[in-house]
Length: 420
Image (cartoon, rainbow, N blue to C red; front, side, top):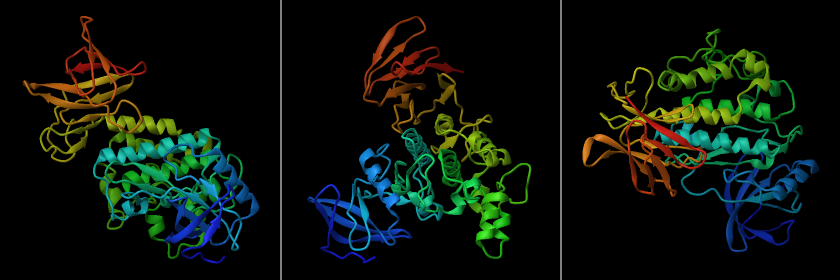
């Protein structure tokens, strides 16, 4: 393959061409160039060793079908075969987004737990939509995500490897992100994607690989046969309650050692279940993306601003702040079906999964002993008192935090304030 240079014109299958400006980066599969398309800046991925005609045809189909959601930096145009190769055109990654690997190496960090949870939600939602479209990702790893550290927004890249269910792209992913059955040679599908998703989420929360503990540290050289053992036939979760042979190592795995007890028990229990030997050996038992979203909502619902140190904290049964260890003193919550959204001043509430807060809990400026729920959404709510009196709560207006007040955010979300 001839590398491209500034000024080269690359023809598109849809007609027209892109003009090469400069190289942006390169990886194992290809080189990414900044290009100009009718006066607009785009990115062109140009393959070093062009995959076969079936891969090219699949790319063509993906361009026609379009992206499952705005989370994907999806192929928008396909090039003609030329100069010994081909490629595809996609949107440029915006400023302020950084590769997931930067977070694992502590080169970047999330501004808040809220941003971290937003990233987890966006990743889950993206893959739920991908599977609804009938696709599987096949090459999921930490290099596939660009994340904004301030708000947790996520862009999913390298979508040229996305294939219809039951088909194989021919592009081998990294063993440490593959499901055990894929390491053993099976065809990737939505079930193996769900395993890879669990690995990514574990790394997002704990900054450590779920299967890299004492066994991997003790490996003299990571050969292919060792990879097949550690990530395939003999995979052991580093926090498996039944098997302590692969525990995190002090001085090496400090992130997960520090974070494992810090996050709520519901998260720990979920990963113990998802990485159990039963789930490793039974792909169809793996957790659905929708259930991950419910879990993330539960984490959000327990995340509040501590009234003492003013820091974010998850509140569990002991009611203590994870930072200052003082009693958070949660005196009210918003009951919404099976969810309980804790209410403390300064806390944002997320009613649905769109990563946009709908409410802000504030102190009543006229009575510091009372709280208010401020409508920071673009839509009006309806609040109903226990006596049946109705009030429309417009954007930027407030409803009092009083026991028995019911709030209807829309036809789907009906809540009730419960005070202690």
